[in-house]
Image (cartoon, rainbow, N blue to C red; front, side):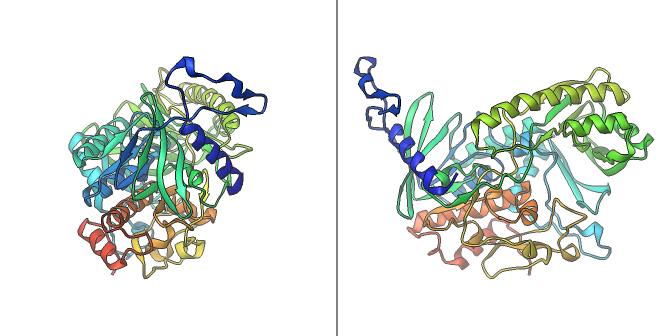
Length: 488
């Protein structure tokens, strides 16, 4: 769907969003026809903020925290009843706080993402909800560390942090439209069981993963549909030690890490296996349902993520395509449990203890920003004058890696939405090249981008700057004060 067509639909949705009927007797059914329905107009209640963050997922949590802590009256709009997004629904671990030093002997070990992203881990550690930054003992040419988390504690911890920061959390609230005039977003339209509302603000950040806010506002976008979707499960009545023996007996271990599990250090918390070395029937059936062999855990009797992948023939923004996929993915989850019961010793009583409420994506809409990070920027380890964070993980490793175990920079221009003065895009929404996107979309990179966007949005709102008018030194200095790491 192109921008013009979507904007037209968004305008119609916006018209509906300022419509409704206070009294059933006021319904005007004469406006109903085979071509559509003209909904009677209605004045919406308005909420006023400095910064509005759309999407309370991986980057949205951090963006809202950063904005509020920088002094902005901040609202977070999230369609679900909790925060966390892909981190708690579709991932296997948080990738990655560190450079890929273990794959390059002699390279210095550096934690390259800090700030709020690290603070979340600190809080999870206090709650017993993370493995910590566990070093990989096998497969460290993919990542040097594995940071596994407890999905439910992540939700609790991040919601507590948002509450402590004074963020207005509009949970169970759907973003249905945008109020935009030329290059400026004035507000967004939301709907919840409390009714329709308009959230007005000076700065806006799209952290929806689907690019909903940007699309409603009329930003340029494409829909590459270049990834499979997934719905992962949490598997109970299992042991990662049993899974280890299954992989070990077949000489199939490709990744392994040890960290905190059930409060004890130096326990296995991550495993992955080579499909080709596993029993033929297991590999064939796992391949048929898109089941990854990678899993993590922070509990003795639980595998936090077993991921089932599926490629769609249309974009994941297509409702009807996704509806069919939701059923198919749940069939695949059932088959995954059967595989563990049949093939993995000690797992005969395994059952599904957690699923995501809806399928997870790796990319929905690609939003046009002022700078498009290239494949060469990433693997050559390029840095920029307007650099706002650095990153070193690549999900295609070891086939593609940042040169020499180093880092590359995320320029500020990469998150400012083209054609708009007060709109940012983060995480999955940026970077057109699939190869580069396999780095910039990852969880910890998205968290870092969230801190940048939230800080910048708050500074702009407080000083009445447009996103491109914000003095870069002021942004850089604030990020540095707030613990963001920069390469010298």
